[in-house]
Length: 261
Image: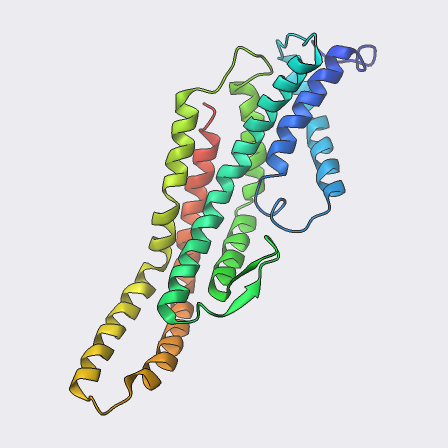
């Protein structure tokens, strides 16, 4: 039904707007940056309402929704809509989880895993290098206008999964989400693999040196040397890391767009 001034506040249009608002709120409250940083809930709600107001006419024009006749039925509709939006934002967070895993691995390899800083996204302590790579991933995410991809995905989901109870989750949706989540470990390791290999070789060489010169206290040399070499390597591979994260982010965003095909 095409909304107009006479039917704008009809029960059908109000329910359609509520369902659109619910699906978008699922993405807003789970997507990176907006959900992870301390943004007031009032701003999130108003942003959700603004996006829902923009998408409402297009969704209502092509909606074949059967109006629910009871409150439990409406709650089931809202739960379904919130789940669709939450999946979109949740899949985008896989990339940041992979970056944090890579930062934790390299922190252990360099020997700075004991250094902790407050993570403003979670409110808990995390390794310094994990936080560094998280900031890099955030800048890449913003630089690629990834938020626009997510809003495009939520609009596309209304075409693939209209507001109708006949459209339910399929095995392909679950399969794609599991496939994206399974690549977290490989992305995190691939991001820091050159640094990890160099640090591993340096540790092997220090082991040979300790055997060749037993009188030398290798630990007094190895600990500061590993930190120095690790920081130099991080700076050397900073540009390739950004390039790699940009390519991975684009692939992830394309995967999110294809979830609800």
